[in-house]
Length: 171
Image 1: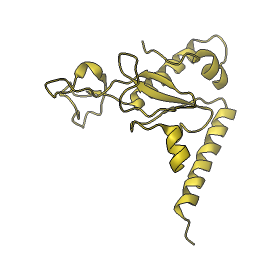
Image 2: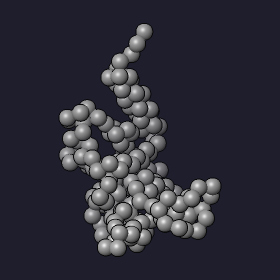
Image 3: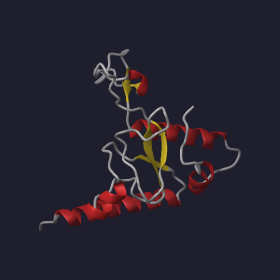
Image 4: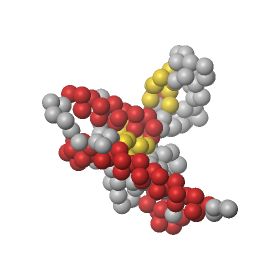
């Protein structure tokens, strides 16, 4: 028999929720980017019942992107009412000569078999931007925090004790 789109979406949402609850109950930390559509995710949910998975759920550390001047990147999704964290993620800013400002991008590893989409760079590296880059940095910071801790930290301790500032600054 046929399952309508709404039922399928609810089923997917339920499976994500079960997996996240299982992870939380087993002290696994989940970090998720918020996406790159410049959406107010609270508005998308309220008006269109659209959610960004897995960042929609409690027990997920949701990460948006910042420009290097510590303001939200032009593309990052965000929440108006619920909390989320941010980290440097670069931004696609054009210079007056209509060229991409490479100083606003993040230099990162890139698959060797692909050509960098933005600016020529060394093979295996690229300049880019995005909330996924921000989420990767935060994941590294959390891993470092956990590895350097003399005690076992829980997700709640990491989320609410160590990440209480509205911004996580990358080093």
